[in-house]
View (cartoon, rainbow, N blue to C red):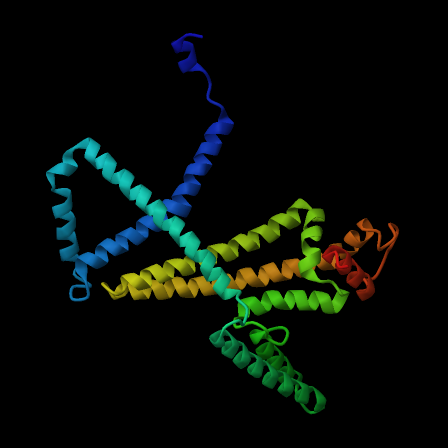
Length: 305
């Protein structure tokens, strides 16, 4: 085939679409957050605390930068843009790594003194509200609205007695506890097998909630970065606060969604899994999975001796 024919060959639409999506994803996830952070760093180091709101000073700095002769060269300008893009991507990758640590911090167990104190304080508050709710239920004169208010206040701390330092960890732990109480299922042992039989739409919903939690944790990581910039330019602390508040809100929504979806998957498909492993007959109908069957299934999957 001649060069002219090759030049006129049609472009594969799938490759074009895939390239466009990858470029958009790269820009949205890596370049833009990192570039925004670089812009704040540049503004902060230029203005400092003393001139934190001096827009003219920032404009003059930009004018001085663009007026440098070296930037008139096309090659140098291209290299500068490439360096900015690479640095932005590197910062975003670093934020993803820190975001993993933030997520682990949110879901951590009470292994250290501070974590144990936090868990103990949350547990005491939960017990107090649960006791008040129990006493209110026992009193026939208590209005239903008061009982509902106490229930909501207790559940805002945790759905079951707190065992973790944070609400996030307790909400996921509550899902495991509630599943075990209802069906005798050890969620840690059963979940990987249950995941294999879930329909693709259910898997996508759970993966979406999981991704939302990771995204919120990454935003929490950016808040730490902006907080560090506040050492040179205090308005960055406001950006850090905004990022932290949004990250907290989104993380709570994601964890609530993830825990609810996991519980729902067990509610709907635990019997199907029991049938597949031979603990329930294929024609079994009606009623939830019995705790004895759930316990037997968990024992099988734990491969206990």
